[in-house]
Length: 165
Length: 431
Image (tube, rainbow over all chains, first blue to last red; front, side):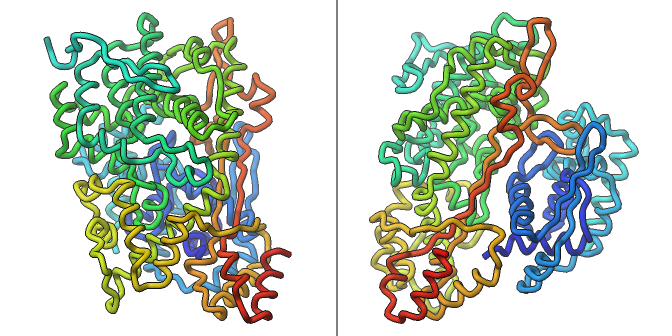
């Protein structure tokens, strides 16, 4: 019961807070693709892979008082920041989660921009295709982002690195 | 004549209680409907366990799929001579509309949760895999099946086409709201679809609504809001859903237990229990098979499985109390311990279930807003987002409503002989 909530809390604890809902969405998706067993279901949306279940779970954690959500006005949009509360830390302590170690992956993700993670997660979404087709697909579904060749190459390298055990 | 252009010698119609008639003229559409994979949808109820609350809700995914096809067919007819509309996409839209729910299994929600499945994955597999559906689509042109799959997955290049099947005002929602309202018999869910279809306009990569049709769209949004809370999230339906999930969970646990043998080998479930579901296994499962096993499992040796199945089959459901999320977690833990003490396994008999809905969301550039907004076409040609024009929609925009309930077998608690445990349980549950 509430194990999936605890897994998300553990992630927040490891990340020591997360800035931006989009970034959060992409971080969890990329971790899933690295075989970290998060169970939130993802589908393709405006910014790439997106999980309504994750949105709901995070909202529940805020309602439970386990996560603190703050809203920052960025003139043309709001940015949301998440940190664990004392109650949240106590809740997490009650669980003995069977999760592999993935702190290094969280560190790698955290220092990247949400635009870059959007590219990485979109490439991973189409990773069943040969790489040329994956790149073509990224341009097809995200024509407005105009990802450069350099960015794509960087994303390919990043995927290789983060997938290493 | 090329297969993609082939027309039936005369138009076929399906009588439909929501749209009056569903019209089919394309040979491709007719052939798709005739495939076993599509016919299978007749054996999968659209609303799963809702018929235990609203007894009329016996309609199938087959009805709904035809309905979505019919709505898209009408939209395309209206778009025919408008600029921005690519006539070449007509058949693709019709096929995607017809096949968008192809991967749904029986009681999808529970099956997906317990066995970690995704019906959208199976929709893709049925369309691009070795199936009759795929053969029909590939006869249209090589790669056509991939295009249909991409439209459904929202990864197709033409976003206008995608938005007809999935957006905040799409054919899918317009059909299920009206159909589910009709079959459940509720008075919510009705709106003037004819009016909405008349004011839809294709513009570049989206469908917009002429501003004169704003009130019809308001009605649609409110219908959706009411249907979610009055029908889809009805607590009795959710109670049945909770029990169903627990049956599947228990059956899987028993399958994995070394010292348990089912009286009836659950062969239709084996690949689900092993979490290695092949397409052919998936397609074999429908409502009738699930009910057969639940009927049989009432005679199994395991008391929990037997009890849960009897509850589900005989509508002897769990009761519920509201669960305030900010309630101290130690109360919850104590309740769970009391259940164990009373010999009632909380893993199966004390279940927290949440429902949540965001009735309409507007677009917030940069940070979030994963849903495309509904845009209005103003008389001067300007595009304005719906919630900025409509006070009614603005009032519910971006506001998620969430509800948490705790489900439990009240009859088991009432039957406890240990008064101390019984009273304490009641105190926690009802205070």
